[in-house]
View 1: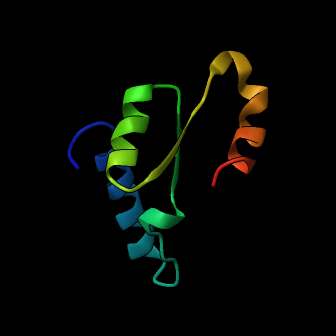
View 2: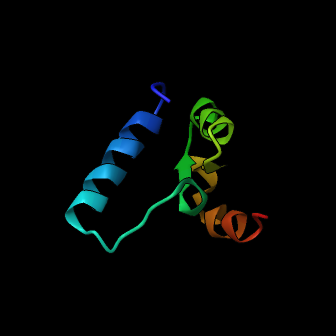
Length: 69
């Protein structure tokens, strides 16, 4: 995906995996945490898990992550 943060995430993953051959990062092991619902929706549509961060309620983030399926 060339829109939103997906392209940057993919580029970072490629660089990490190139520098350390024993590291394997896949969509099913990735979680996007973002305060922009559009970025979360794009991630979800590309089979990347995402969770919306409410900056006003950031103390709830851990609970939200633990409640994920």
